Amino acid sequence: MHCSYNARFPAVPRNFRTSLLLAALLAGCGREPLLPVVVNGGNIVQGRALLSQFQCGVCHAIPGVEAARGATGPNLAFFARRSYIAGQLPNTPENLVQWIIDPPTISPGTLMPNIGVSAEDARHMAAYLYTLR
Amino acid sequence: MNRATWLQSALHPAGPDARILSELGWLMFGGGTLIFLFVMTLLLLSLRRNGRPVSTLLWVAGGGVAFPLIVLSALLMLSIWRSAGLTAQSSQQGLIVSVTAKMWWWEVRYRDAKSGREIVLANELHVPVGQPVYLGLTTSDVIHSFWVPALAGKVDMVPGRVHGLTLRASTPGVYRGQCAEYCGLQHARMAFHVVAHSPEGYAAWFARQIEPAAAPADPALERGRQAFVDQRCSSCHTIRGVAEGSRLGPDLTHVGSRLYIGAGMLQNHRGTLAGWIADTQGIKPGARMPSFDKMDGATLHALAAYLESLK
Image 1 (cartoon, each protein chain N blue to C red):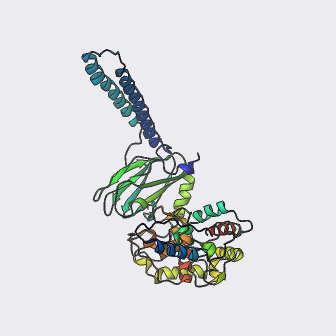
Image 2: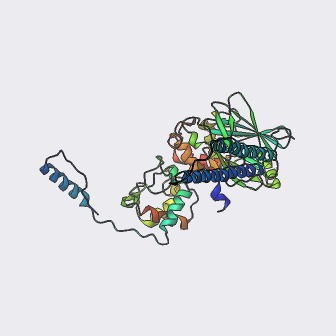
Image 3: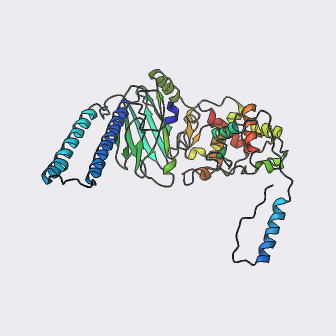
């Protein structure tokens, strides 16, 4: 985790600024460093293009993907930091790939449809989503 | 660059008329550049330290009268000569299609000459290549403008009037068009596509479109058809063979065969259909369709799959 303190508070007393700085440092650095998640056979660049091509952005806001501002599904910013997918599956590459391929089978109530993504394409998409840290 | 890259470009004409228009455009651009360079050269000459004044008569009569007279006359002659080659604007020949602009989509109607039956599409115009197609252009609300840069110039669509436009495509392909007159909140998302087929391809397409919607092939699709009725989608949308009461929204009889939904906004598949239904107002705020956000997931999937199956 990279921590920086760039904000300026010209009107605030120095000791208050220092305590703010300390609080920011403590809040920002409390986590374990997040290791990159590798998806076997997944290509990040292709994944990004596929997310745009399948128009996942209709329902999801996905940073870096063209016109992806949807609000029906969860915002996928910081996806790699999630503990669970769809509130029930541990967030592992295998689970994510299965979820992208066929969400209703895993979670019958979900709004997310099976849109016919191949396993190969799902791996590319997963690879991109794990770059959202 | 391939054609797909230039989906919407007046500089890449795909029909004889658009070719003439782009030739005239390039000629104007080239001529304008030459005249600009000529004037800049005169400017530089005038800045010489020991230049001598030009005679007033030459300056006024030559530069002010003769030069523009010659240039503009030549341009007029040329444009009259080239415009004579444009397709005659007439409803007496070829295919006739009615296009009605709405806030913020396009209703396209064809009439089958043999049966007298009408087919209605949304945001998509299918034409056979090489044949003149007469479009009767009108609007049901505010002023819009019909513009497919690769095929023809702009024609305004004015309430209470029908404007004609005859266009011809010479190369099969998909050409994007859009509303070219500001018409409200979603003007920028009011696009459409012209699909130019070979004559046989067009005939086959028309034969499929004239049929009513196919009956659901399996229980999942039947559930979707039922959802269409239960959710009262039919109070605005027609599906021939299911519900034909209303024409407020786009006709969905063969919605699965269309390339895009939401007036050129989203590629058409069950994912975008489901997303569109669930959050219409989030995707296209102000569109006349409300977001249907009270359905459970399985019903929404069935509905989207049913609509996708209407090829």
